Length: 415
Image (cartoon, rainbow, N blue to C red):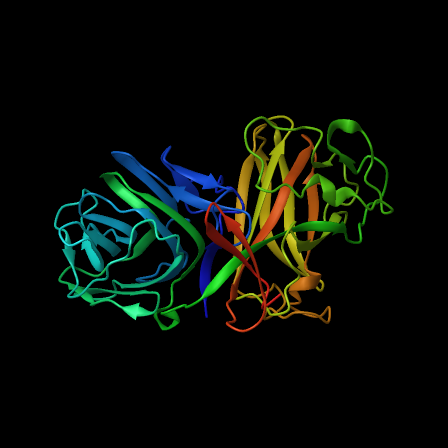
């Protein structure tokens, strides 16, 4: 499989729109900690005569005319009118293509419409889903905009819906969004989302997303005093420090007012390319250690500077000595509020993801290194986390806890 993005809502979806991030759009798109399928969070889309969406990063690179995705959705209330509810956009044809709801028969279909909601068309057969049934339904979608006609294939809980074939021009597909672009009212919870740009990946099938944060210090390489410090406390991080990870383990990623005391701060590294603070990733609270390799890993971080002069910093995953950049900025003007960066790793920086052994691609030995080539102003790493998607295994134990009469499941079978 060749994924390009994954999210379970654990990061808080605060990265912002555009190619470098992903986001919630509209006040009716929120994070829920009370209703979720796996992990600690889901995304609730609950608009009332407005728009709401959970958006992927825009404009995949390289550009793709194929989008395949899988997410889980709890349908607490259906829309009252025809609506596209999980789509990819073909900008050349001015069409949103994907999962559609048709109000006349109350069924979900493979469908398409203009961004304004007109020219609504659906495939030959749909499916009825009971509202508020408390079930997380698995949705698999494939949009093919590589030729005229464009096609849309959808499976819900493994049942194939009738394919939509739409006579419009081929075009690159931009961000994939779960939710609506026109005014509507409904109530959905979404979780465990993964996106691919490869046709052969359809259907992605059952899986889930768990989150991982620094849980221990790695091996720091700090040359002298005042290289790195614990936020604004003037307390050095040294090669003997064992608690620097606690400064960057926030879940979700921080937002709002900057906490100047709670970060790893590069003050004046002597050797900017070789001095670093290192952390070791582990399961976040309530998540078990995986025993099978992930299919998709998203690395997300928050950072800021203490003043607006230009400066440089680098944050990279360390996979058995091979580094994979998440953030690498040079001579960039400082920003004193939180900023965010992300990078997707379909494989580890050094090779295919594996579990155990400490060699190339070992997800359980993955580390992060924070460098700064220029700490004037001071560069601050505020938080870093991983959201990793795993294939679901039918056999084995599950840890299940009831939530308001429904169930959220932390998959333990593959941990």
